[in-house]
Length: 284
Image (cartoon, rainbow, N blue to C red; front, side, top):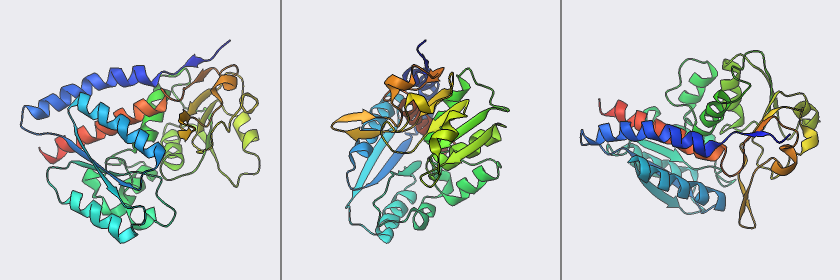
């Protein structure tokens, strides 16, 4: 039997209605929610992501600005750009698009986005609050999207579930693991140094894949009936591919997210929700 599709586009459409109403309420007060995306260079996957964000922002009533920095900019140059937007009272949310070029250090940059405008949860203060389960100001958008999709899955609530996460990045793997643990699941985090990632994947009731490796996960990696959340987005020969081989995996999984059309649309909605929240908070 083919897996049930966890349809991110349908969920995003449902959530967008509420955000548009909140944006309209701000507009009636003369407030235009504004998000600025700072990019370094022009990575194809990042450009595709930002293009999708721009369309969605327009439908909700959020202004979106993009600043593209030269690919050879240093840490100080990125911090200076972020600081400029941080000081602008008309900008309510700021994100630094990742991945960054290898010569830049997110650890030396992330705190340049003030907590109240850190709508993708990259500031160490927000990450620390997430780790302590003490109320992060903003939950990173992609991990938030994973949780929204899991809330619509047959495996919800997560209490006692066996979950494997492939990938430990500060952007997705680590924060989503913390969120899932906060829901009382048992979480195994695997990464490039894990000796047998496939073996860990095969034990999972829920598998979250955020490795950045196109079609890494095949059907024989899955426990029959598993819920598979594919966070991967890599442009290959003009096509957007996930980390999961959807065609084979969907014959074994119980539920699965497609790429495109799964986590991506919900990520954008989660981010826009954070922008609306930031605008509401900053203009009370």
